[in-house]
Length: 326
Ligand code: EAX
Image 1: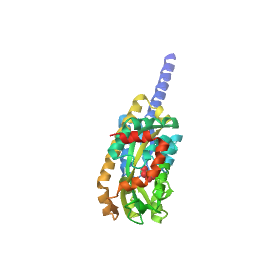
Image 2: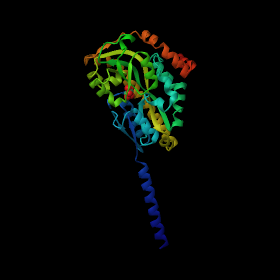
Image 3: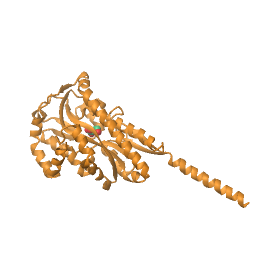
Image 4: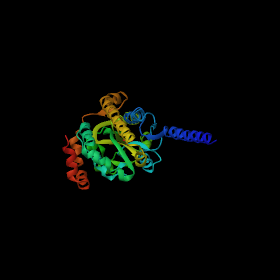
């Protein structure tokens, strides 16, 4: 009798344990982007999902959502902060509203080229900025990118800052961008990304600015005629996770997520490089007029007063430290 009770007890205990093990084998998390799957952001989250699954032996699955299916970038970051969505890959557009220290990265003409931007983000300055997310309920896993932003519009060729005067352009909901574009004489209309295509199509705004990767993935060539390679600002992306969700991971799984994020960034950057290499030819073939000899010094000069303001806001020494990175 005693023995059979013991056996029943053991069977129940093993059964329960087995159930617990099975349940934890199936943790699914959500990640979202605002661009299409076939894009530099899609490359990032598809790689991340694959690597997380591989590196955790399938105990974690990452469900991927594209094209703003779960909302715009601000909403996705909010959802991660609230913990209703575990992960997001987003431009820094709405990020300063959550982590103000990141504003400095959105200063126009701060980075010379992608190699410079990547070196800063992967180096001490970028890594220190990642830690600023902790206090706001995030674990920032890695910096990725959209690339250098260029201007498009439906009205005219933009060769110099004078050509921008009075153009109504959609901007990101980012205070640094808004201040800079106002300084160029643009009539700024901040708007969430999922609304941009329709706004361009209906003429609510004349133009917008985004990297070639985003312009192509979002088919803006269908609703915009003029593209100018202004490269006026580098657009970083952040792979961000809910801090409580990250903190719950075992030490080994934390490493797995961080390594997966590194792989995601590699895939993301290499797709941006590919898009930058093919973009002009492709967009010309789709009917866009591309101005590829923009005199950037004129734009830098036009932004001098705004830049003086940024130096005051973010500290000239901090801006100089970023510029000095080789
Ligand atoms: O991250 O809002 C924007 O223009 C962003 O560059 C876009 O959502 C891709």
